[in-house]
Every structure is written in C-alpha cells, then in structure tokens.
Image 1 (cartoon, rainbow, N blue to C red):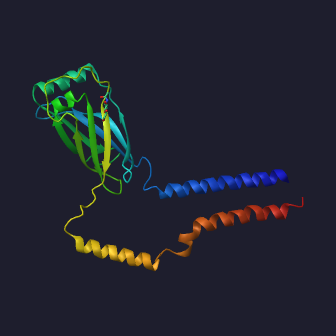
Image 2 (image 1 turned 90 degrees about the vertical axis):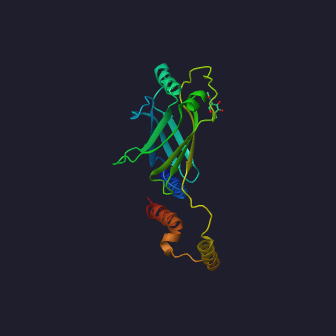
Image 3 (image 1 turned 180 degrees about the vertical axis):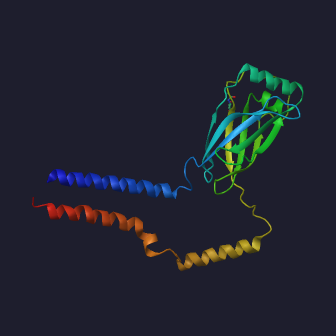
Length: 228
Ligand SMILES: *[C@@H]1O[C@H](CO)[C@@H](O)[C@H](O)[C@H]1NC(C)=O
C-alpha cells in the first residue's frame, strides 16, 4: 500500500517536472539548434575564388543573440602561407555563409582586406543577420579588430579563428512611419486596458487544468484500490 502510494507520488512528480520543462521550453523564443550555418572562406584569391568550409555556427536564440561557433578546419602553416600570399597581393579575404541542410544554398557573403585578417591574428567579429523567425540567414559582416594594416605580421601562428559571433535580426528602424507606430501603440494600450485575451478558456488555462486532472486520476485510483 505505502509502496503503491510512493510509486504514484513519484509518477506525479515526474509528470510535473515534465510539464514544467515543456512550459519553460515554450517560453523561450524559439527552439535550440533550429538554424545551423556553415561559414566558408576563400584563401586562393584570384578572379574565381574557391571556397572551403571553415566553421559552423549554431544559432541558439535570435532574441538573446546567442550562438555557438565551432571551427571545423584547423589552421595550419599551409593555410597561413595562403593567407600571407593574399596579403602580398593586396587581395581580399572572402567568406560566404549558407544554411546547413537547406535545399538551395543561398549564400550571403562579405570580405575584408586579407591583411586585416592576417594582422588581427585571425581574430574577428562575425555579425550574422538572421530573419526574426530564426529560419534563414539574410546577411553577414566580418570585422577584424585591425582596421588599418600596418604591415606587421602577428608574432605567432594562430591556432584557429578567434571569433566573436553577433546575431541580429532585421528590426525595422524607428523612423518615418511614426503614425502607424503610434496607432499600434494605442491599440496595444487599449487591448491591455480591456484585458482582452481572445484565446479560449482551455487554451488559457490548460497548464492548470492538466495537473489537477492528473492528480485526480492518480490519487482517485488510489482510494478505490486502497482497501486491498
Ligand atoms: C580573441 O579575441 C578576443 C576579443 O575578441 C581577444 O581579447 C583575445 O586576445 C583574442 N585571442 C587571441 C589568441 O588572439
């Protein structure tokens, strides 16, 4: 009997945990790992550069701008020599980015002077513009900290790219269309004042109803079988 109750309590606790988990999950602005981007660069230069993959960026959340970058290609002295020859030719360091797993690879790309990349010792800020739904990449920018080349080589060979990733979504700038904006604000204010919530009763309160029903089911069953 005690064991049966304990089992029920454990089951209930697990259910509540699962419920809490789903609830928290829903409140995050969107799912983990929905968007993975592949960064390629071209180190051969010339009029038709050949790109090869160098890093992947996993966008965790557009709203909070969190992303994880991993460098899939180790930086070697050969690659460094290629970059150096781009520098010697005053060429560009080009990158392009596409969405991993997408059917048509629509690249977004950018470049910087190779000497900036070289003299920054592969330190860079990568700015990725992702549509606000977090489903595709719409732009990229690369910013090495060395903005003006001084002709100095870094003291040591960098081990890998040292990248700070910034995730942005193209939020409309707060300019000209103030009339619509104010209208929207007013509408929102009114809605708030009226406490309007158009969702159905169940949609609003299911998170409270489900646990209660579960408790009733679990403990209701306990009383029936309690005499044995
Ligand atoms: C990596 O970048 C950060 C800033 O983005 C910088 O402070 C740090 O020195 C860099 N590390 C190396 C090894 O270049």
